[in-house]
Length: 292
Ligand code: UTP
Image (cartoon, rainbow, N blue to C red; front, side):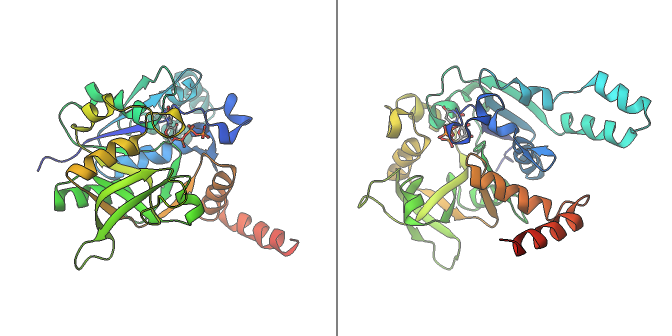
């Protein structure tokens, strides 16, 4: 089986849950301590063996392109003041992978965003990392999905059990546990944003899927779904009903950077293990919590 080398990061959403900041700063560029959210996705993809990454972007999100580019003037100033390590760090961000950008001209949904990547993907399987789902894990989650694809040869969706309240905001999967496996399921149906009574289970897709090129024709033929958007879940549901997909309950903790709470939680989790600040931050946090 050919190794998977391509990934898509859809990052063209409106980010309404993060207003007002998101009307001026793309939510994907919000910091987790000192790095923008999107850089954690790029790192995860690269650590999984991905070489080519397409970021689906939109008007007013140029800051993402700037972040993954060289900054000759800024680097020169750092070098002139002896800050060689800092200058090298900036440069190394741009050299991590081949990073491409494509604009989704209208925010018509996650499925529509992924559909823009047809010519980038060509005829190969590919990973999709949802632009606002950051996952900290031992083994990068994309790698976990790739291993499941290599084992079973079917598209893979990354899932976690969530509360029924969240199921209605995300999606719900119809699954059967694979024999002898704790974290693998065969999935033959799913529904986006189910209403009460429509849920199959409390397993939802959280931020990572591995798809095959057949998905582009399915997406192109999709009518608008929940919220009037072209939903990636609807494309995956059609595929699952016909052929089935693998659902992998991945190892790792996921933070929803598209929500205010998720953004704060990711920052606390990261700051508590950040080499430069962890000791002072943890001391602050202990004191702060005492006063609550
Ligand atoms: P979300 O639904 O979480 O993002 O989509 P959103 O639309 O920005 O959220 P709110 O509800 O307005 O706050 C999941 C991912 O898909 C991308 C988003 O950028 C996000 O990373 N997306 C969504 C697109 O790229 N294009 C779209 O049309 C919609």
